[in-house]
Length: 257
Ligand code: ZN
Image 1 (cartoon, rainbow, N blue to C red):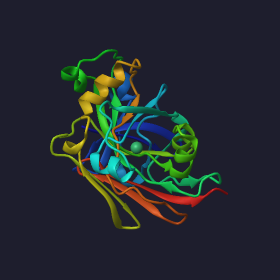
Image 2 (image 1 turned 90 degrees about the horizontal axis):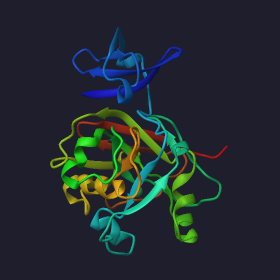
Image 3 (image 1 turned 180 degrees about the vertical axis):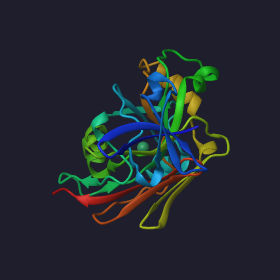
């Protein structure tokens, strides 16, 4: 099932995508908390402005260097345990919203990533049970100020500027992780490509590991790392991250005004 959060006129709604009719079946409330109760209304996809599918109340957990080829391009090996960091929920923007280049950085880079949305409260989840707590999957861009990441020695500032976590366009409650892949392009030119099967720490292991540290709450988002090919974004660019089955997350880039 494919779900979106969108605005239509003055109202914000959640809907289930009807791919044949190109319409959203409007839901009474957020399906993360209230299930799939339809209002009876339908909205054509073309009339809906898609929003970030979720704004976590609690946290975005991210994993660094989770593809060997990316760890190598960063000048190191993939860590033996998942390398966790956090991004604030204020970094989230939706599909089509602009990534704003902060004045403090001269090297902002894209990191296309698979995002996991947690559906249930979970602590100390076993790897074999971890996928059961997933609400669904979407696409993220873990935008990073690479110069500040190097300079600060830890990653909070580099990863946390407003607009540094584009998310969307839709959530799919089912995704074939074994066969899945991700591709990032800038202005139509491919920069990054990876297969989920090549993650050093697979999705279930990341969830289990994160849940041994934090209590995971419904709506928490986990970013699962980026493949090789990270590179700069400059004002005027459009960056697109595509996962077959989840669509394309496209965002323009502009300078701070
Ligand atoms: Zn990342």
